[in-house]
Image (cartoon, rainbow, N blue to C red; front, side):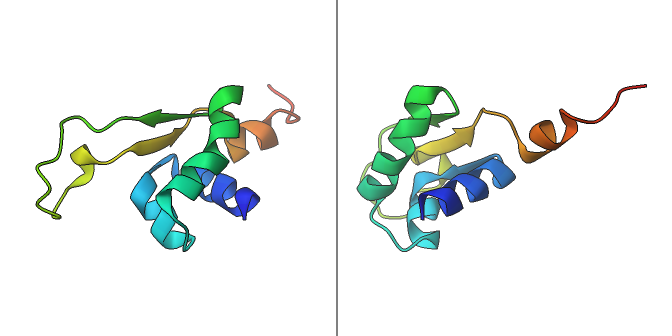
Length: 85
């Protein structure tokens, strides 16, 4: 499961934590716990919500934690061995 989350986040570039939890049928805290390893390694960052929520249950993306992949992408890894002209 953890490698599927990594692949998805790496391919997408970023995603709200709530979307990752929904996509992988997990609790947000469980996803956050899995992502913690990559946060410590400097591969992802989790951006806090821009503003506090009033609890209306209709939050948009600016009120959600956004997970952003900042490590190498698949293309970076693939291109490393390619000759340069």
